[in-house]
Amino acid sequence: MSLLETLMTALRGLSGNKLRAALTTLGIIIGVTSVITVLALGNGARAAVEENFRFLGSDNIRITSRNKLDNDELVPAGETLSYEDGLLLTAEVPLIFRVAMSVGGSARVRHERAVLDMGVSGVTAEALDLLAIQGSVQPVDWSGNGLLFGSHLLAKGRFFTPLEVLAGADICVLGHKTATDLFGGDDPLDQSIWVNRSRCTVVGVLTELETTDPSMRLRSRPNEALYLPISTAIGNLFDGEPSVTLTAQVSDEGRMEEAKTQVVDFLRARHEVEQKLDGSYEDDFDLMTRRDVLGAQQESARTFSLLLAAMAVVSLIVGGIGVMNVMLVTVTERTREIGVRLAVGATRSDIVAQFLLEAVVISAIGGLLGIGLGILAIPTAASLNDGIALLAPGSIPIAFAVAVLTGIVFGIYPAIRASRLDPIEALRHD
Image 1 (cartoon, rainbow, N blue to C red):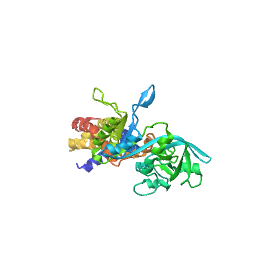
Image 2 (cartoon, helix red, strand yellow):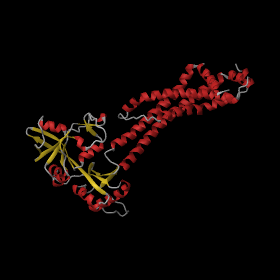
Image 3 (tube, rainbow, N blue to C red):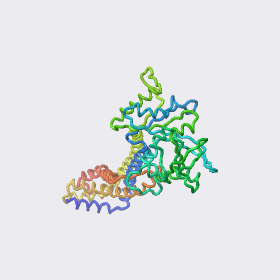
């Protein structure tokens, strides 16, 4: 018997009880839907990790002061990172060729009768380019092709120069809303504002920005910004030396681990971190690279995906057991038919092929319906996962193959059992 004839016989067998076949596919549909959704959630989780830490370039080391709990209060674990640490890092560490620094504080900002209490950022000259590279914000209705540069974020004027940062120049750059709140419709360039008790000159205004993540646009306020040179901000906003965040750029990405070692050795010597008796160090700083963060986060994402995959496998197993049970019932009901086919010359392999194809067809139909339902379910799954779910095209053939494999695995026993029936006893069966 040819494969086509076997397939037609299997389809006729299924059409004899459409309701039973439909109910049998239900377990497979649920399982395949779970597989599609799980793969989409897993891809979304990995993409979210990449997005959340995009600010760390592959050649960057982010260095922050370490804190500890003291009487339920976070306090510095030792000496905090300083502006001088950042300045010396490029001179003392061979593999570091540039260091961006930032510090945040709050201030009262005034221009004539307009007064704002707001957050102020002290930054180095690279800050605007780094903001563009991060990709977390873009100009409103941005339609430019290619890379986004710091110059694209400026509406008028300019940003700080390295010499102005070193000199502690009394200048500032305003966010779009900050400029509107302070000056209304007037041009703020070359105008003076007061930040606390210090006067500074506006040298630039950012264009109106929006976050690249639509789900964050109601919570993020990139236009309420005021940037000062970091040396100016330290003298203006703080009574003492604040904790500074450093982002060090490595000259050779392939020597990242060596660069980290050099940074650690430099900071331990500068902060006088002594080696303990067991050979360890109690550092007062933390280093973070893209590889470190993504490794840990991707491991968490993989664990999450495995848990969801286990649930999908359970659904498929339940669906497969349903297929096997129905096929066993079908074999019992069609015992006489099997006997007739064996009596007129059908081989046992023909019987195996017929019933195995019936199980595979049921699973394949369930797989196709499950794929369709899974694609439709992705938006719902995304809404339960902070809007993060990405369907990879490769997941569709994987899900279909899993459905067919389920039909083969759970259909083989009923098919073999049918082929082993004694023809004479089968013909006597009512």
